[in-house]
Length: 232
Ligand code: HEM
Image (cartoon, rainbow, N blue to C red):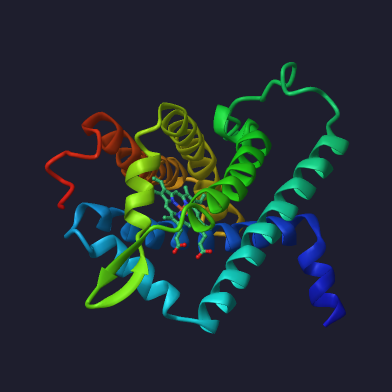
């Protein structure tokens, strides 16, 4: 067991664990997006989705604890890899030049620590914003439930909220596009010939996923919450 821990703690082990936790977080993001898009479904769809989660009771706490652990572990690993790289190569990123060839240095890869830190701060504020935000209520099948849809529709009509969300969600494109590609590399699925294709797939995946997230605040903002995709 100690040798497994030692392997996990090595620089390569940490990269692999960053990849594994990153893939798990991406799966969470796909699920979260699917839930969020239900805001464009029937009038009750979004609240039924959040009520279903809340009705999980103690199981939801277990899922949330696992999710928090994943986010924290991923962050700690990312920061420790970055610190170790910085120690090994103290040149600043401004003066650092790649040797060309198969190097995958890009704006996304060089800004991982910055985009990651912004996403981390966003996440704390985002949870305070919605999960612990105003408690409106509605009735679903005769049972009182939280009206989170009302809160989302209200918040995304505020200019500063929409600017902040769109900024962070756009930054997440950079983080995910490099993260997805890097996970493939760390998990040994990289093949020199297929490398370019994997990178392109990673970029396409990150862009499509995050544009779908970005669509929600922008649509609500520009239609004043009254667009034809929102049912009352
Ligand atoms: C348009 C963008 C987004 C919207 C409208 C949105 C909406 C929401 C809402 C309404 C909740 C509260 C759910 C509840 O209490 O049942 C929530 C929770 C959460 N969101 Fe988002 N979200 C967005 C983007 C993101 C992104 C990009 C991330 C990750 C980087 C994220 C991560 C989370 C997490 C971790 C929670 C807490 C889950 C829990 O504790 O159950 N969200 N989101």
